[in-house]
Image (cartoon, rainbow, N blue to C red; front, side, top):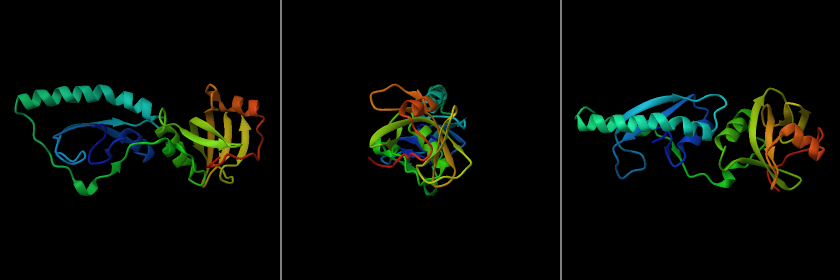
Length: 204
């Protein structure tokens, strides 16, 4: 399982770890039972989460230690050298299958949370917002200090598009319009003739 159980049981533990702001995750081998990822833990290995980690990059990072842990588990089972450890069920957290709607940006959330959301939804289902009724995918963004009304563009620079949130500024750095290629946000803003005071919205 791609988390340090009992944290992030369920279908989307990689995205869940990023969205929760965890600094460390990992992989576990467990004894299967009738519950959802509730079996005794056999072995686990921790893996750090970088500040710029996306769900895609973290998934790939977990593949090698996951494969190594599976092999080690089988060897230790064969040697009768492994002791299952019950999970602390009271400490369990859960994730569910992601849907496209999970990527919708709600601008009244904090910039810190929205930055994690963008990374947690990359590469799928991808964070998105609306501009003039059109869905715009947000591939990369970072939280910055500052103030601005939720969804309001507070600045445009070579770095990207600064957008107000419920707390702080979200700097959009890579975006994509429907049917178009991914663009540096400043190039996107120039092509759309965006200005300070324009607004991204939660819905069409």
